[in-house]
Length: 267
Ligand code: ATR
Image (cartoon, rainbow, N blue to C red; front, side, top):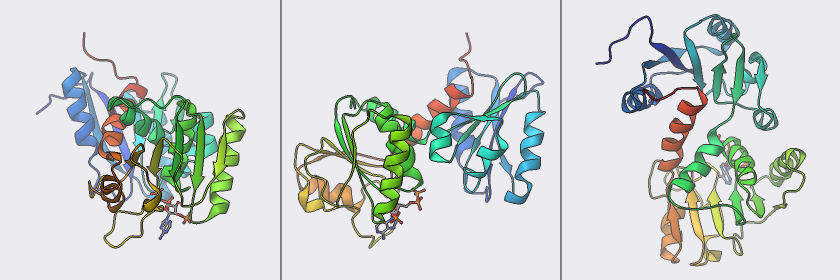
């Protein structure tokens, strides 16, 4: 058991409900691994009290920052003192970093976690053409991060095309030189195919795209962690594609959050 002293730096995760949250455990394991004197604890904050909780965080001198999750990812933007341009364009944040003067700065690292997850498995994105299924919360974060990582072309396809058009317009407003199109369920002709929808979590979900159009030269990627082998990944493997699982996204996100919160390894 870690010894907590007056010098221990404090981190937390804001959520409602809180009982299912596993991030503190993962953060504390990471702190132990790098020999950092910090502790991450769950903060149960109800939406009605979020403003008061955030005001308290601003005044806690030994707080490094907090991770922000459901249902606070959007509301936190208005309560933070600052937000990165990507978090503003997405309209959501998942990390609130407390600067030394008490200012709280909101960041969105969901998409970067996905990109780093791919890179950690040896996949480079620069110059690649990518098909992204979905235009919800996860797909928004991933879309911005893919363009930031230097993909040559991004095609966004969603059940509700207007949401794909809206995501395209917001990405272009930040990265005007990007090549972005709104696509159909047909993912052929792209190097990477990414499922950014929630389809595949539940048994009997339809596939997020037309898997009969997948070709063996494509890498098919999931954001879903449970089940590990989604129907899409099984269909992709049956068609001879390589696949990328959802788990590295979370592992890399923890790493990124720890870096973002200014945690330095012990010397
Ligand atoms: P998350 O935060 O997991 O991204 P979300 O913001 O609710 O969740 O987004 C869910 C995504 O899955 C959306 O792209 C949604 O498509 P719509 O924008 O058309 O709603 C997609 N999705 C969910 N159920 C779907 C279904 N049955 N068929 C096709 N797409 C679906």
